[in-house]
Image 1 (cartoon, rainbow, N blue to C red):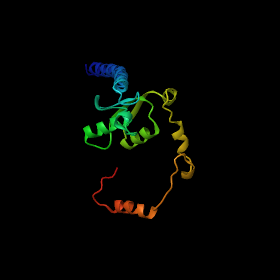
Image 2: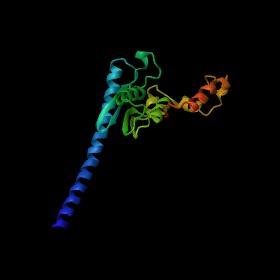
Image 3: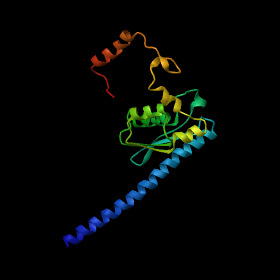
Image 4: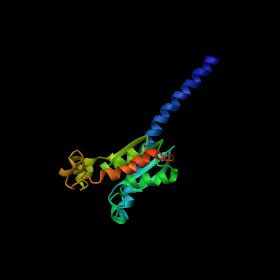
Length: 181
């Protein structure tokens, strides 16, 4: 009897795991569709470009965003950044531990940086950077700029007053009540 019980338990657990795999796939598609829905709604509302993002924790959307660059005159208001801001506000945290980010398009370099700073568990994206370039959103020039010397970039960068700037870093190192991140 004990063996039959164990076999039944193992069979039910295996069945549940199989169902969970298909459930996860359905959930991923559902949440990606939510990101695409945000992209289309934002675009139709003239918020900005056709990009949307949702952030999920424990199976629930805890952050939403769509591109709002042109409506807010904010070049950083990309879908991923607005969703990260919303999720972090809702979680009362500056990190997205245990979260999954769904974005309608492969993130640009700025959003990629924001995603790494926010530290979600995983990122799913719909269209890719080539698809975005094909409709006028080409980030290739940014990728080309990154490895260049400061003085060879299309927007010149020049370091000045480094010693003065390092004072803030020194004070940060000495600060006892800082919140590390």
